[in-house]
Length: 162
Image 1 (cartoon, rainbow, N blue to C red):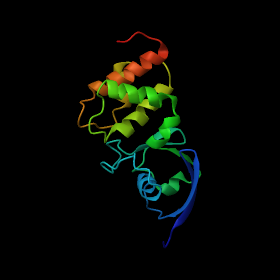
Image 2: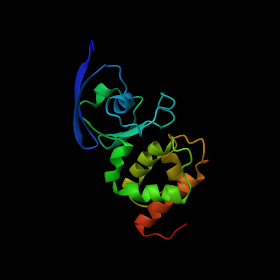
Image 3: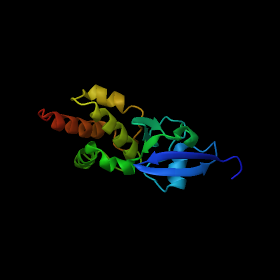
């Protein structure tokens, strides 16, 4: 690969070294080089949220970040969220509330929801909607997704169900 750049990063807790094209987007790197296909390619403009991953603990759009920008960083994909305490609760709530249908947006939704829940407390429904506003879902209409996130936040805070 002519012009390749060597990068070293941690992906889902594992050290990774690769030579990559400097123009390769992080989500493409994760999918094609590492076989981590949970993060999806949607709009490729950072608008839909299907490519959402964590970069050094912050959610980012993997289609807007170049793989070389992740050099030295820690990346977590939906496959790595299994270690996050919010994962099991969120997954169960999404299933119970029918907050996923085709599943295309689900990895990004879960990553964003886990980030919100990590802040603690019980966010308002408007705060949940605002936090998830960068993630498009064409199937559920969002109501069930907000219900699922709210139910997990309430359960974690010991608050009564809404």
